[in-house]
Structure formats: structure tokens, C-alpha cells
Image (tube, rainbow, N blue to C red; front, side, top):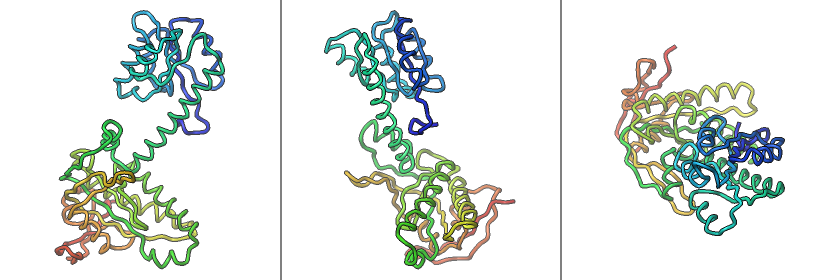
Length: 341
């Protein structure tokens, strides 16, 4: 259950070498949070990496063996714990100490002796900020590959890349223009939101990246994050899952939707386009071929090129739909693909 869920109870790790201080914190917070406690820096690091991972850490500065600054430094160096907000608990009241704590990655300071109202207010603020950060990252994961998100967070930019082993999928709805002219705008947007939302979930489950939607066109790809030699299988399975979902949805849905899906494999250039309203996109001849394959494909079927067919294993059946002249591109033999029973 995520930090954004209404029923989720956040986990707080309280770290202090004073048993009395830990008891005060536990009593103060136990009704609203799940509490982990640690009496040393070493134990704090151990608990911070154990499930459930804390959503926030209250960290005493003055402790034997390893002080709070050192603990924070280790936490921020570990990818597993570096995003957990750390609030220092301190009797110190020097600007230099606060500056040092912020440089080590601390999010805030609470002075001892603690004021219950201040503690709760600061915790609520940073948990809310953490929830918004996670919500933003979840949205980015739908739109961008993980390595691109990492580049944007760490460096603020992402260099264009050439990918030689990718598959590209296009999907659009048959008769969309005619159907939309008969639907109320609110109903249409709700339908597309529902369908594309499920498509996004399928892409995530299959390891595919949604590139973009343009009206009724949905574009996705695999193989963008690394040399993934199963990219064709992943994306064909994604397309077949789209069809299964739509068939099941059409059984009871008020509006029936049918689609065409085309998949082609090859190479692309990927990158961030734009500055203030940027979008992650892929371009290249093979992208154009995938779009043409979708246009020439069969309804409620996944149509693939020879390039994609050659990358799929023995678990698939193919039916040739003949040599097809793709607009602006050479002739290609296209195939409808299904999984073997």
C-alpha cells in the first residue's frame, strides 16, 4: 500500500541513544504511525533497509560511535534509503550545525526538548512532500523509462540515445472519428481515460514504455532501457493483452471499441523534446514503419513485420496477410500473430 493511500499508516524510524527520548516519541506518535526504534546509528541503518522501509526518519545528532550526521551520510549514499526524509533531533542550536545537517542531506531540524505540536506538524509536512514526490515519480514511470527518470533527477537532462534493438507498437481504434461524433465529450474522455489507463498498467506489467497518445493512437516501445533481446516478445504480448482486455470490456461496456495493432522491430533515436513542456519521444524510419503496419493491419489483431516475426520464439503462430505496400515505404510481408494454444 502506498503513502498516497487513505488507509496507509506511515512508518517512522526514531533514532536516539536515550531510551527516555524514544519512549516519549513512541508515545507521541504511536496512534498515527507505525514506529520503528533504534538506539544506535548502526541499528538505524539496519532497520532503514528492512521492510517496511520507513517513510521518514527522526534522527538524533549526538550519539556514541556514529553520530546522526554520519548516519545521514550513509543513508543518502544508499539508493535504497537515499530518498527517505531525515529530520534531525538536536539540542544544538548553532547555524553551523544546521548547515552541516542540510549538506549531509537532512530535510529539517527539531530542537530538544521536543514540542509535541511542532514534531507532529513537521512530520506531517514532510510526509505530505514525500507523498507528492512519490506521486510525481509514479506518473513519470508511466511516461519515461527508469534510466531517463534517473538522468533527469540526477542531472536535470537526458542525452539522446540510439537504440539498435527495440520494438515499436501502434494501436488505434477503428471508426474512431465516426464514433466520437455521436458521443458526449465527457463520456468520450472518460472512455479513453479508462482504456488508456488499463493499457498503461499492461505496459508496466510487460516491461513496455508508453511513449505517447495522440487522440485515439497509442504508442509504446520495448528495449529502450538496455539491450533487451526479448523486446519483440514483450511488445507482442503487450498488444495481445490489449486485445484480451478490450474483448472482455466489450462484453458489458456501453460503447464497443475495436482496434488495430501493429508491431515492428528495428532501431530508433530517443530523447527529450522540448524545454518547459518536454516530452520523451522516439524517431526514425522504423517508427514510421510500425505506424504503417498498424494502418495496414487487421482489426482486433496484432500485425507484425518479418523483422518482428524473426525475433519471436516457437510459442507463436503466424498467418500471412500477404505482401503489402506501406505508404511511403517499400513493400513488406505482414503477419497476424497469436500465441499457440
